[in-house]
Each structure stands twice: as structure tokens, then as C-alpha cells.
Image (cartoon, rainbow, N blue to C red; front, side, top):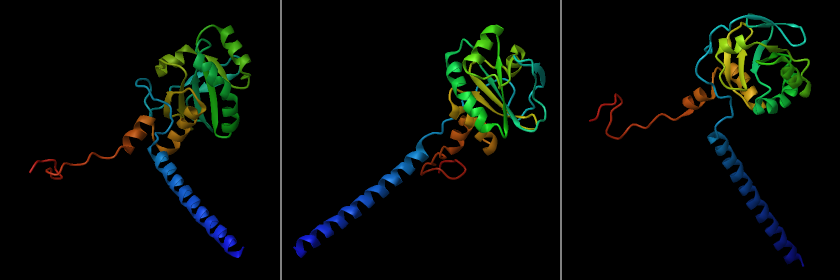
Length: 212
């Protein structure tokens, strides 16, 4: 009886050790995959106001009659989100905007920017219950920033400088613009470019790149 109990204890300990080793191996593999998977971020498009330039200033009025200032120095950073009632991706993204605004309200002001018929814009706001978020109908803003595809977001810092911009279709994309401001990477392209390993020199080349 004692011998059987001893054997069972030994087998249990062996199983425990094997399980621990498998868990450690999986944890290591997950870490490797995490390093290899590219980050999820907004895709910056060429053209328009460059990152690092001062944003143009606009004095506007939103759908509720409230004054809205775009650009210039301010207490919090400002994000412009360009949307349209005819854009299916915009409608999906606007379903996430209320929670995003609530979570980031301490250090970010969001302004929705649209173009087109007023009634359609008002219906879009009502459908997604975004009455508390400033919404301006201002095609001149999109033209000045050269916004060609929607939904598109531009982040302006407290000094009125454009810090990041890009096509967005998820909350992660919106948050990536905030991360870009904090880290200094202006786009996902720059992040990936700087993380690419330097090409290895061939055996017959010297450091100056001349063949021996």
C-alpha cells in the first residue's frame, strides 16, 4: 500500500514538473510572437499639413450652436475626426466614440468634422448619441488638411502642433495616435521602419562597403 502511494506521488511530481516546463515554453513563445507581430496603428497618408507643423486655426460653430476653435494653444490636446453619414466605416467607428471620449476627456478634446447636408449630419449624431461631442460641418477644414479618405483623424497638441494623423477604423487606431504623440513615432510606418534589423554585410565587404 505504501509502495503504491509512493509511486503515485512520484508520478504526480513528474507530471507537475512537465506541466511547469510546458507552461514556461509557451510563455516564452508568446513573448517571441509579441515581438514579431506588428503594432496596430493608424495609417498615415501623404499630403496635407505635415506632422510637426502648426495646425491652421479655424473659428467655427457646431451643430448645437456652440463655438468651436480648431488649432492654436489650448489646455488639452485636440483630435479632429473626419466622418460622413455616407461612410459605413464611419458609422461603425462612431459607435465607439462615446466611450473613447469619456475615457480620454481629462487630456483630450474630440471634434467631429463633417461635410454635406446638415440634416444627415444631425441624424448621425442623434443615432449615436453624440450630442455632447462638438460636430462641425466644415468642408474648408478637410480641404486645408487635404483629407482624402474617411474616417481620418488628426491629433493636435496643446501648443497647436500636429503630432499624428492617419486613417482610423477602430478604437485601437484612435489610441495609436495618442501613443504616437507620447513616443515620438509619427506613424506606424516609421515605427516599423526603425524596428527593421539592419541588413547584414556580406563576408567579403569591409565596413565602408568596398569589396576586398
